[in-house]
Amino acid sequence: MLNLDHLVIAGETLADAQYYVEQTLGVKMQPGGQHAVFATHNALLHLDDGIYLEAIAKEPGAVPERSPCWYALDHFSGGPRLSNWACRTDQPQQAANRWPEAGSPIELARGDLQWQMFVPETGKLPYDNLFPALLSWQGAHPTERLSPKGCSLRRFVVSHPQAMDLRSSLALEDSRLVFEAGPPGLRAEIETPHGLRVL
Image (cartoon, rainbow, N blue to C red; front, top):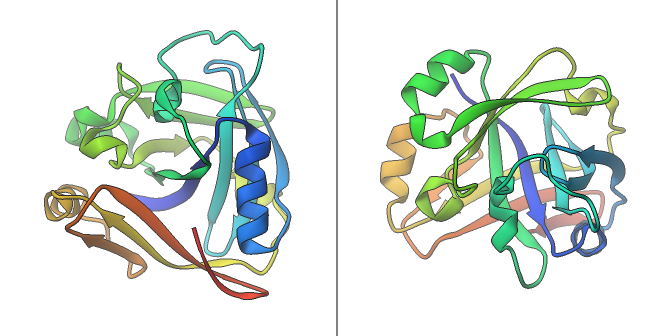
């Protein structure tokens, strides 16, 4: 029911988040756009197999249409880092019934991209914000508009004291996805034209 969709790098500013990605991976991100509903903006990087990397931050001076902000960005502080991950489903109603803790679906659009995003009332996802954000694309996918940069995800590690419970709940079948018991955190190992890099 779920497939890995994208990884999220949050920053206090978009420039910070984008610089972190570009310096770490050695490739340039592409401009994304604005999300008026939550007053955020982003930049994107194509990864293989229908996955992408998103750098995101709150947009200075923009007034959100609703709050709290998704990805718990209202409470984000410190250096840019891998903060969240997202999984897509083509069965949003079944997903809503199975994982009510993921939040309620919200209709969103940016240009010709349209999707439903599940956002908790608090803005913060379960498992210390490490539960994946769930979404359902309606039509085009962002990777169709991104230029490949020779990057691909080798391994994605979700660390949490209750990692095994999270793994059982999601029942995600993806050989790149690893759940480990430990302090809350995320780690992405990415193959780049410059070799293996880690976010």
